[in-house]
Image 1 (cartoon, rainbow, N blue to C red):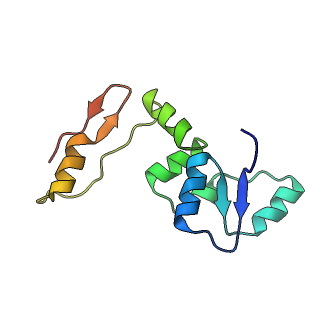
Image 2: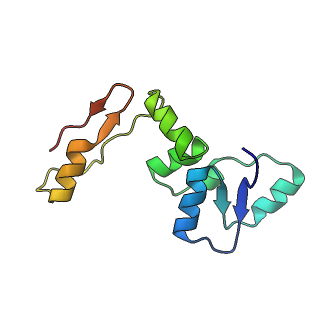
Length: 113
């Protein structure tokens, strides 16, 4: 892929950041990254995944949403269902729990609580 690989800005709106992550573009508000880029230093991916959830971290690590989903279909990524204690669920939660795909490579779904 050609084009922009890194966005460094004073602030980055959530939707823009998520769109960049889905396209495989790294984003940060840490301007010290620019000095490392100028010196040709390796920048650990953890500089861009710190504080992110499991799915977002996976999307960033795989270089975008498309690559992440390809990895899921190949069985290289397996998501754990959310670990919430047993409790009554809302209708929306019941639908999500029934449809949660744990391993698309094996077409295995999580069972509802």
